[in-house]
Length: 94
Image (cartoon, rainbow, N blue to C red; front, side):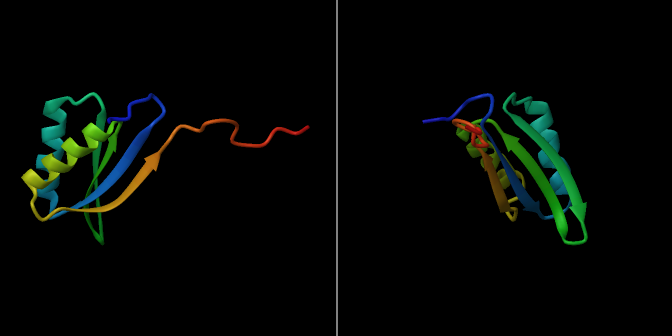
């Protein structure tokens, strides 16, 4: 089952082999124009990364497949899910 709401999303960070692989991955997401995916690249002293926001589980699965097809040595460094809040986030004063 695929989750899909306006308030639910997941951000996944992949460490990739280098800048050429990063740019190939970003170009692929750009040309595919996947409406549920936003991808950005960054790099620093510790590595080169692709950061992807996915709106559905299906998008996350497709992103994983694309990243590993372009860069088989890429690996997921972290995943940060956001789920909609059900009910008040701060208790109401009586």
